[in-house]
Amino acid sequence: MPKHYRPAGKKKEGNAAKYVTRTQAVKYLQISLPVFRKLCILKGVFPRVPKKKVKGNHHSYYHMKDIMFLKHEPLLEKLRDIRTYDKKIKKAVSKKNRDLAERLLTRKPSYTLDMLVRERYPKFIDALRDLDDCLSMVHLFAALPAVDRAVDGEKIPVERVHNCRRLSHEWLAYISRTHKLRKTFISVKGIYYQAEVEGQIVTWLTPHALQQVLPEVDYRVLLTFLEFYETLLAFVNYKLYRSINVSYPPILDPRLEALAADLYALSRYFDANGKSKQIENQQEGTNLDESEVRLAQLHQQLPSNEPGALMHLLDDGSNKEDEDLETRECKSLFKNVKFFLSREVPRESLLFVIPAFGGTVSWEGEGAPFDESDDSITHQVVDRPIQGRRFLSREYVQPQWVYDCVNARILLPTDKYMVGCIPPPHLSPFVDNEAEGHVPDYAEAVERIKAAGRKEVLPLPGTGIEDLDDPQGLLVSDRQEAIEAAKRKQQISMLEKQYLDELKLELKGAPLSDVPKEIEVKDAVGDAISDVQQIADDVSNMSKVVMPRKKRKLLEAMEMSKERKRSSVNRLKERKKNIDEAKNLA
Image (cartoon, rainbow, N blue to C red):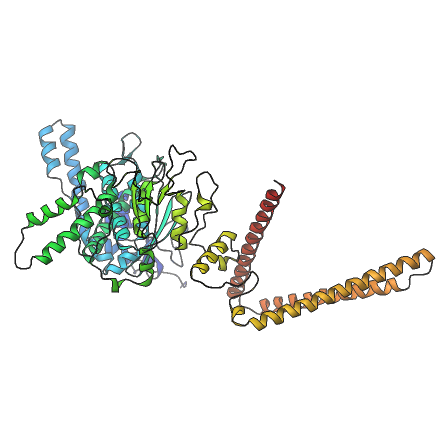
């Protein structure tokens, strides 16, 4: 009997029993492919890669436990009911029974994803760890236009876009109010942000405020992901707002909301909610009605004539003792700094970044807390070379200055960021320059400015921090370098003297007996160097030969990575050298 023979009727074993293809899974669950795809996205079920692909390499495989997991999901029955109900509506419309179709539409079954969120993320910290893709997707759809083209099959409902915009603004308002923002970087793709929430690092990408061109992709899959991400972000926002004693969902000022100043409206809501909490704590003996508390909130949301009180960050329920050192540093970066944004700068991004680091900000347009003519403004952010009027009491900077100050955690000099000047390179805070092997010049200049602010002494280029602890070592190394330079100078002078003697002998016609000896010495030295290099290469190759294949491949991959990094560093140095030469020629 062959080894792999299986009698008829015997149960399958191994990978054939553990894994099924997508076609087999759809047939087993008795659903269509779009419903299966939607169910897998909502439940977090993804294809597996078995060790042995029974049906071939061109199939995607799912674990049988995951398929059984989907089979007993209550949402599956709800999706089947919705599909049946859609058939009833379609039949009524085809029979031109409008009354029946309208009645069926009003009683269409619906579902929620609350239990799925609780099931996939049992703890709040699990949801924060998986929030990067969620935030990037929500911010992307918040910037997309609403599309309803039945011919192309593209449909992005306007309600989904408005909901994404509301959720994204609620998240940004919390990060800005609690000063949890840590890094930011402007790239071609958009603006990267990184925040620290409950000890977890959250990084997301927001697109630029430009007209978005919709690519040709399957929006049904994206909208399925977005459906789950909206529920997840709503849960996270609720938990975060309740952690600082702020009621959720927020009630916004309709006037500011109509002027597209949602972030500022949320900031005023934080102020109003904090004041209403103070009212509740002061009146312990009296029981306030819910209507009175809401009236107090709405009263605080009305515009005030005091410009300083509009963007003043009140106590948000967290004590100063609970804040870590980094949060305090971020909170006081733009302290006592007042910004005014011109109409050409990215307003929404700066309205998020500046208050997150303790600054006060206004803009040009209706609903702004203070006007451009306010004498207390210290910095005006502009992005056009010509200004109609200039105030001597403030500094005019480009928007990059704000982001570079945030990444450096200090107020950088504004000389290089003035209007009309080419700003310095915008360095990414997500790159470790020491690990990459190349430290840009502007990064070194920023480090020296930070060290001067801390009254520290940085080592000279070519030396390390450990050399500052041993200044005698620096003297010794300098003395050794001087001795080596003297030896080299003496050797060069000897060679010059020998060359002159050879010229004199050649003019006299005497035989040059010393020349072959010198050539032989030089050849012997070159051969010795090549022999040493060959021995080192042989030892390295011998160590590779005795290695197992897996470790040898890993070592080769590491060497290739180091060589690639070295070549990129050399390329950057070559570019810098060419730029410097071009500047010198100019």
